[in-house]
Length: 234
Image (cartoon, rainbow, N blue to C red):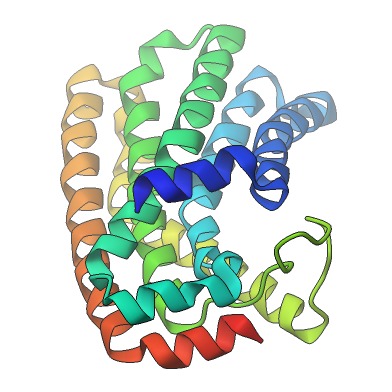
């Protein structure tokens, strides 16, 4: 499953358009915020937003399969395998981009002492966000441009629904990451031990939510494959 989805990320223009937006977005946010008076530390904002967007980006992954999803239905693909495979494929492509932009932000600002805490925030946002994306995608996968069409095509009201679901996923990922982000903002940046502790907490908390989300959403897929096939085929 992960190998198939990874091929999509390399070859499908719809996925490649997403990769381009993932690269351009943090650069634009960091530069515009810094120029607008945010200072050098504003460069940290871009990678954080990119990390928050990563997981909810999984929401429409079923929709990108379109009618080809019938192969899952007839072969009885385990739902959890579908969920974890799609997350792995996206992680292989997007997580390195998150890390590269984070290193650039640290290099530009010179705040290397913040590296463990910054990594904790990024890890938490990615893992929690992926869990949110897996759950929402199993309930309402939204719509995507049909295979072979323009990657920038819209789906009318369906496209607006997809945007709303995506935005809700980003907000949910941020809220569920507060157990790591709040202590980090209040106490962590001035204390290396606290940063290292929060890094461990981020991996444990994010990993737990991701595992629960993959299991629950996988079971739901197995119960609703036909309905989801009809939805994404339309």
